[in-house]
Image (cartoon, rainbow over all chains, first blue to last red; front, side, top):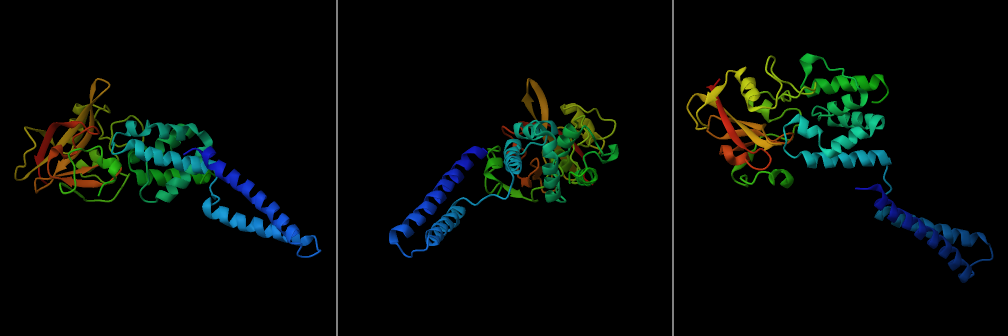
Length: 163
Length: 149
């Protein structure tokens, strides 16, 4: 899912916050509660705070960066595109997997993070890692043994500050 | 129950004629599972990320797959009918860019049913070899057999 459409409601929410802040100030001035000008500010802040709480409930501010969101989205798309295929070549040629490779170096910490999350069921990130880094720490006799390959690649990533 | 997106690729599978026999696991595929190997991903690609038996050509051809299973004692069989003391494998293929390309392998169980690993997802047991035929795997094109271990 594109990031831009998700930014629109957040932007509109910001406008709402500003509007409620101003309204809070206006309400205080209209009520003429006290002579102290700080009261308007308090009303404005209260209104703005209530608006923030309400908006956050509707549109929780994501703790993920845009790259992380894009990567997660591409991973989900990759799962869908590959379905039940067993062919390595078909699986890595899925458009979303190719887009992950296309992210280049900035995909590396995300891929290593994903590999760590997958634990003892590592997925085929090795093609992407090789394509991006042009390196391969996996010896011939461990080809296809994904658990061992994951350990070697994670060690490679930690040594270079990616994991 | 398989994910509906996955199940959609297998028109001959329906609730009642298959059984999920393992959880989702991307570390091995159907070719490995048919060979009895759940520790590696088997595929004849030239890349380093897949296992292929030594000495067998790394080609995506039915013949290369027959040779791969021959390293485990399998030889061509007349059919996929269950026979006492005989373990059979079915190799599936589909036409891709005008070429017949292997897509899947299933192994016959002692009870006559078949076991298949569906890519990175679950293993299933299915009653007939055509249970996993369809747009994803094509159809079974050759059977292999060896004495059941």
